[in-house]
Each structure stands twice: as C-alpha cells, then as structure tokens.
Length: 401
Image (cartoon, rainbow, N blue to C red; front, side):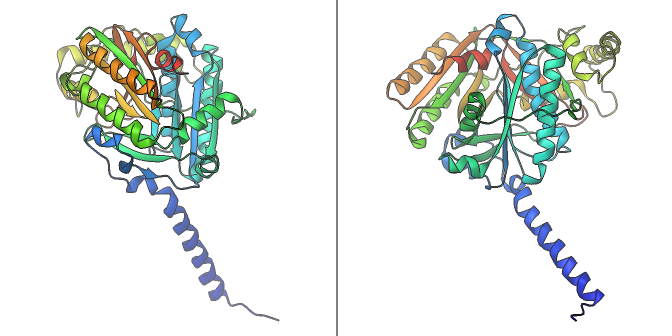
C-alpha cells in the first residue's frame, strides 16, 4: 500500500493551484500589458499591434436589416443597441479592461478565455432585450483566436489613449472582419437558451443633443482592405487619409471642445427608459428620468460644482473621450469637415480602390450623434460612441462590396 501524508497532499494541491493561477494570469492579463498609444497616426502601422493569445475569445454582433431600421428613422435606437453590446460586456467583466470597438449597428470585442461564458450570456441577454423592447433582431457569435488563425486570418490589438481617463482598443489582422462575415453567413452564431436574463446596461445613456456640422459636413468613413491586399499597402492609404484629416481643426473631431449641447427634456429620454427600466413599467421609468434629467439640465445650466462633479470639466472630458476615429480591420472615422477636405479624402480612396488596395464607403449628413457609457460621472472614465446622425457607419459600410 502506498501512503501519502497529509502534508504531501497539501503541497501538491498548492502546487496545482499555483500552476492554475499562472496559466490564468498568462492569458487573462494580456491586454493589461499593452501600452496605450497617444499618436493616432502610429496605429496605421502594423508594428504598433500585438497578436492576441490563441485562447482569447472574439465576440461580434450586429443588427439584421439595420438599413431598414435607419430608413424608418430609428438610427438612434440602432446606435443604442450597438452600444448596449459593449456596455453589457463591460458590466459582465466587472469593468476589467478588454478591447472593444463600436460599429454603429453593432460591436466587436475580445475577452480572456475564463470570461467566455459570461460574455456569451451578456450577448444573449442583449439579443433578447433588443427583440423584446424594440422588435429588432441582433445576431451574435463568438469564436476563439485559434479558430480565426486556422482560417488564415489574425487578430492583433493596440490601445489608443483618447485622454488621461480612457483608451480604446484597435484591431488589425483581418480576424474581426472574418468573424463578422462568418456570423452574417450563419456559420457562427450563438444559440439562445431559456435561461437568458435581462442585460446589465448600467451606465448606458443617450442624453446629449446631436452635434451640427461646424464645417458643412459630418462625414462617415469606413475603409476595409481589398482582397489579397498587403497590410503595408492598406496602412499606407490609412496614413494618407489621416494626413489629410489632420489638416482639419482638431483633426475633424465632431464634438465641440467644450462638449455637446444638452436640452431638456433630452430627445432620447424614451429610449433611455427602455434601457434602464429593468422590468419596471415604461411610463414610470420615463417619469423618473424626466425628474432626473431636469436636475441634470439645471446643473449644466448653472455650471456650478456639485460635490466631485464639475459640469464644464465633464463636458470637456466628454469631447476628449469620444471615439470618433478607430482601426477595426480598417479605418473608421466620423469627421466634421469641409467639402474640399471631403473631396481630397474621396480622391485618395478612389485611387486606392481602383488599385485593389482597399474598399470604402462614405456617407454625408448634417449632424453627428453620441451614445454614452458612464460608469461614474465623477470620474474621467466615461466613454462616448460617436456616429453620423443619419445612417453614419451603417450606410457607409453598406457601400462596400
């Protein structure tokens, strides 16, 4: 008979736990090791990105028939659902950092392997919520980075520091676009279960007024790689576009430097009630938000500090934290620009598309809009998803063939 002492068992158990923790730490802390980049131009260079570990999980979601919803005047709702995908993931991850990207009518993200089950539950919860609250179908899917690489694509990430309080994930390598395409084709999808709960959308709101173009046009730009185009060639086009845009005031930032306007009652109060009611009656939640927004409007109108909350600072940080430009297996921008700059952008894109390097779409409108995720109004960590107010990214992406 082989005898094993209690002490030996304890040592083995401790060793196993240490090994397990080391394995978890090796992958789950990956994103925290990436240093944010201040200069957006640097992100056009492939060398600025780091490959995600094979066991990380990519999630993607988008609205089925978003162009029909936009034509029906529901683009604010479309944007809110796209932002809900992200806010549900952030809350499910207890605000731990991970890369995500807002796409107007959907979103993409990547999480560490231990977070997969929670991420999928959050996706399914938003999917059911979108259908029950708005009669809008949201498709969603997950896959691993290893599976993406087996299909011949890659997933690399970088972090762009928008301000001292916020940075946004950037993606390259073609893997996010592949996952989205596979989801749309039906090859990847999540199957809904009966146990799906209401999503945690705490912090999600849409109180700011739309922002009129100051220079004539709010331009939505979506640029993707051409088939078989080299990443270096695509990066060169992106760098050229950024050079043109840098000639604009604040690089075409569509949010005024002191933040957007706020009116009472805000246009999106009914929409926000559907986000925050959590099973309560819609009219009661609207009434509660009416009172809450009256108080907020008074604070912004008076402009005085309330505890840790300083209205002007908050509005200025709203502008700094806005995600009006990003890399998502290509370049996406929402720009406040003049016709001359628009023509320069289109000319360079047309040339690159004719050369087979990129595919692109542009959409013009008079205003930009913003959907917000605010974990705490007294801290500078609030994030703001910017899009054109009349179809924006969805219309621009629909032009890409």
